[in-house]
Length: 115
Length: 107
Image (tube, rainbow over all chains, first blue to last red; front, side):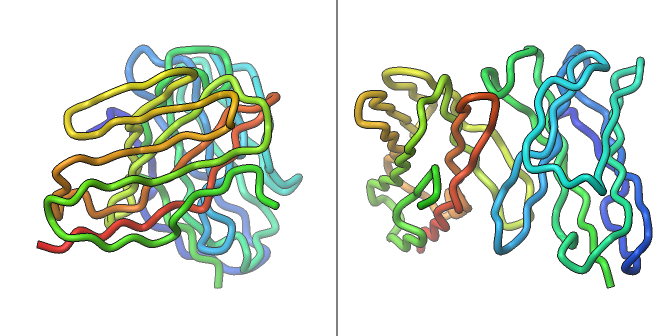
């Protein structure tokens, strides 16, 4: 158990809809990362937040947005969903502020299926 | 060409064999990560390194910055090592991952 929690575990929705994925980092971690993993694209970095502020952006679509709240939990919002958005979405947390320069602890993931 | 290339894509071996998985990258980096993803889907960070070599139990990771290459070695492999191993690099304000190496260890 990494200490990172994600909800929901599974989500099935229709094209055009909007969903929110939630992540709670390990106690004491200030950085939260979001990743998308699909069969054809592999693991892709979406965005990093540190202590409530956006720190780095990866391949995040404009239809997607994220935020980190004062209690450090984070939400990833996916809107105008398309079939190609079906994937595993992982959240990870770490202590440091610099992108990808310390060990990350991954949550169990949310499997999103868009029908 | 992908910024991070792993080889082999698939590897099947017998229990006890010495395993090597390779990762080559084309950008300047400040850190390299090795991740393990079990069949259930969960991801665990194995190593983060920026130079030299790190060891944890039967796992060893090395990196050669000049050659832009890293290797993950598993000694005395075991069926529980069966997983997908993913290499990722921290380049200029981005994190990029390879496609993964699927390792199967048969008893």
